[in-house]
Length: 315
Image (tube, rainbow, N blue to C red):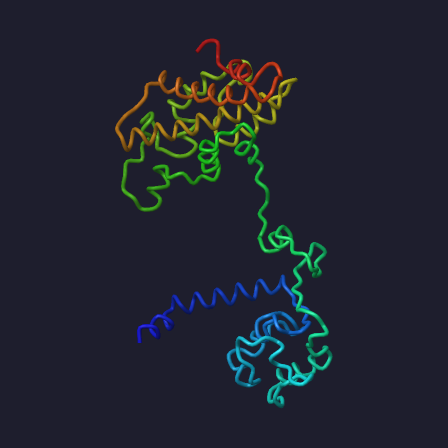
């Protein structure tokens, strides 16, 4: 009784439907050339022009054709001929017509061969996971800001937080309130405005002070929103342009990451850093990362030297 209840549950039925839909989708990328018929599944494999026969006949197929649900194609053959009962439906008649145009499986034909979709759209014996993935997925437009998030000099933990900021998916207070939570909306870093992605990382006076410390040789003014860093990375030119941009992108990630940490520390641990202490955390993180990269290249000036050029002489 318990098994019956489980199998009859909506969740079980939904799982079965999902598995059948997945199988049907995969059949669009697989074909089977029948040889001896001992491997190809009669009901589930795409071995005739009619597609998987289970899709055509449904649950009544094994009964009407007298072929078990788990049968191989070879089990539909007897003494060198197709072993099917007299057609009693239009689908059964169509199947018999199609089978009459196909060679009967036998040992002389060799083993069954599965074919997969190739790049040209046809089918071949070699399987390409890349081709299959490109045809399975629903591609989205490439985002213009991805080089600011993923680049060679990145720090993975900082990249992840920056990526989430670009997607506007961090649980800032404005988002939590929109979900129905009751909590104060104010920014815990400055208390001057409501907390949001744009405010917390760029408009907040606490964040602005940090950014202003880096308005030196390369930045005339700090970025005012997250996408502005993308624009700045395109505007920075000169003989060291690409490497200066790398330092800028790393600096952006380190500041964002540590602002998020500082925000959480004030909310959940009731501890806070002064402006100067926070700047030292950012500075130490930048130096450590750039020092680790310095041995990989002998180009002068080094990334660490370029970072020092970012620091405002008046800070």
